[in-house]
Image (cartoon, rainbow, N blue to C red):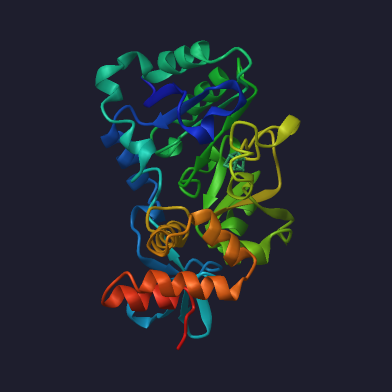
Length: 329
Ligand code: SF4
């Protein structure tokens, strides 16, 4: 049996879309196999808290890094010898909902496993559903053969138009590049993947770096940000790409590097949102109001919110709130 588990999701907003459902498969028939596929892929996102040169992929020890904490207007900065590094996050899929929701699917719903399970999900999907998302968690190339991957891809494309798929193990298993976006850790990886025949690449970066690279080209591939990151839920995998098909269908789309902003459990994006929520609550304003005054750079309102929030907390939290709100005295 091909080691995949498939379902038709009806309640993950990113994947539901206009048809109310989307076919999605995981690489592995249980959680142990899924995790092993990521270990075999030597995926960098298995381990968080590493500092990396986003260009070369070089990892620099934490004790060599100078850290400037993030604020309402700035991402945190990690510097070494004049180079700005990025902090590698833990994988959102493996340590988040996509893995958790795989819990015991294998025991409770054995009919969802293998090619039969994939075909069942396709049959159960709404008739106008046009795409499947593969390896929602896990890496296909470390858990199946090229022949099996071909069977999975043909089963999907026999009914649906598009197949969204990424893989981290393309260096060891270059055959996967025919089916999957090359998940890259660094820009050096992107160049290597392109030289090895990748049609599409992806990379995870802090938003401030994405802003620097947006619209530029690397080895002829255009760099652009995943629209799901920037459209407040209006564009997701379910409607991405319009009539041309989703950007992460490596057979339909070509010559792009899709940049994702860091979104793991410990990413600055999430930490910032938590801090904003807590400060807004302490200051007695809504999160939307706080976001508005920051966007409009309303200095008086920002100072007021920061001071009110700081007056409601104790000890180190006061310093933390003031530093985040850029209240320097
Ligand atoms: S670029 Fe499109 S297909 Fe790829 S992850 Fe973003 S929304 Fe989904």
